Length: 277
Ligand code: 6PG
Image (cartoon, rainbow, N blue to C red; front, side, top):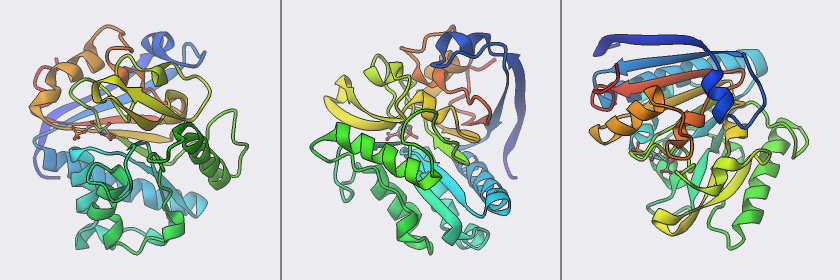
């Protein structure tokens, strides 16, 4: 790949930090976290797209289908647009892909702020996806509690498991990170951070005075592969705290992303990672 800076950090560490922030009671489990610093946001998008192709094809080979969770945000959008290009499009068996979302704003699917609309415009409208395999979060519904439960039910039906208890394992889950350290719609000092059993919840976000719908830590941390896509100077300080700061989950919610069995890959551009040591 073009433009990869010579920085690659692979960490293998005891989950002492995770045991503090995790919603689950596991100790002394070994976790692998990989951090890659690339030269630009477009290299982050390119790497994210390459991982999509790889994990998609290996999941289909193993299980006949591929379940992926998309994220909102400008960096993830760049990756989705790339996947819609001729070069990438032909490398993916789209009819075997199942698309979910990790969070959504409480707006209709045609609204400019909708994560579903973003993914549709960037990717889904340009590929032969099966509409029955696109699972939208209906966060615009008046009863957002019920809508969150319905999304959890949809997930359970897809995986053919009970709609409560341990969450299922998505093959691949993408995340962005905001300048305040939020990820998905897990914002600092909000109720969803403490959710220990539900997979999907509404989350009131005071700074926007609105509800969002979001996957919870227990749900995200079950995924087989979690990939963060982070770019931009405005992320410098939060990224430093999330990756190298003291445990402060309520302030930097991205610290709570630590897959229990799966892999965690941070794809960063040079700007966002400028203060990492
Ligand atoms: C959303 C998100 C959110 C996003 C980050 C990063 O709906 O806003 O899913 O978690 O991914 O805010 O967004 P940028 O890549 O645009 O900075």
